[in-house]
Image 1 (cartoon, rainbow, N blue to C red):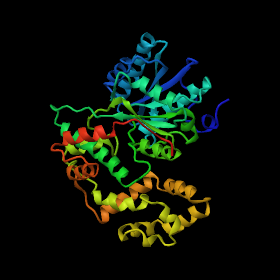
Image 2: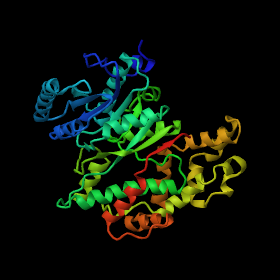
Image 3: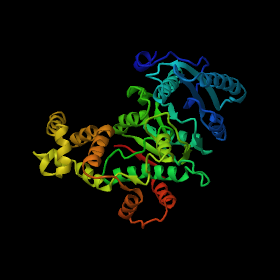
Image 4: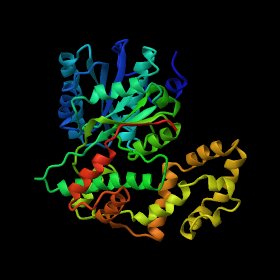
Length: 413
């Protein structure tokens, strides 16, 4: 019997008519829109020697307003993938291609394709009654390490209650490319943000990169599946999962996302690199560290909001002005009235500060009080807090941040 989610919340019935192996435990999904180098990603996966039974679902897709040339190429790519998979599939790893044609222009995008592929994975696990199956997200312009599949499988086997996890990533850099400095600075910006969130004691200080996360199939369904956003779908989905706890960070495998520029989405890596290339964005600048010093007031001791009658006495004016616009006094009262004791209050308080709400605050502080500052200076300050001396170049700085964050962890909160 199908779960409630698979009965009521999917966009399509099952699209793959081949029975899954009864021992199937990992499914990797890859959205693919106009991806001429997809074979590089698939060949990278084939360099793995999985001990688990694995499937790879490629979701080739295009919208109604896609050019005729791309539509033709997409259909041909799907047909080639179907033929290729017949000669490639083994007992351990098999590939399936699904084709979504002429999607409504208002809905078509990576969120739509990711949802259809993840739903298909959930169907596959349902067929064999595997409630611990792992759905892995990868993008069609990524490479992976040779231990990628086994590291994911082992992590979930060791941490049986794990609900979801990030996989360590490093963007592909090429010193010969004019985009090299841009992608170094952009990844440094992403890693700086995570360290800054850790500095201000935010409990969900994790990366939200769509090409490097995985989730238990039942958790995926219980959280309502993937959203249909054209960009940022990974951010919104993961911030629904983080508060559940039992979240992991897999450090002994690596995803290597592309550093290419792109105009497909309104923000994200591809857009940032395109803007850098066209001199529309200076990636040497990022959020002022003073913003996170202000935000830290909210998380360094959440109990004070449980104990204090008037929150305005314990937060700076710059923060108080934003909180007033959010009716924060009523929010705190509601949380207190619907929780039994301090521990329950703190958990619900953290849930209130979803990623969306937190970034609304960060942008408010940036726009009204603290302009962006030099990224290298802010990174140096963060490293100094951790007892690490200043690094000279952006790549040296990125190397240090990578090392700091390349640690396996499992968060049960």
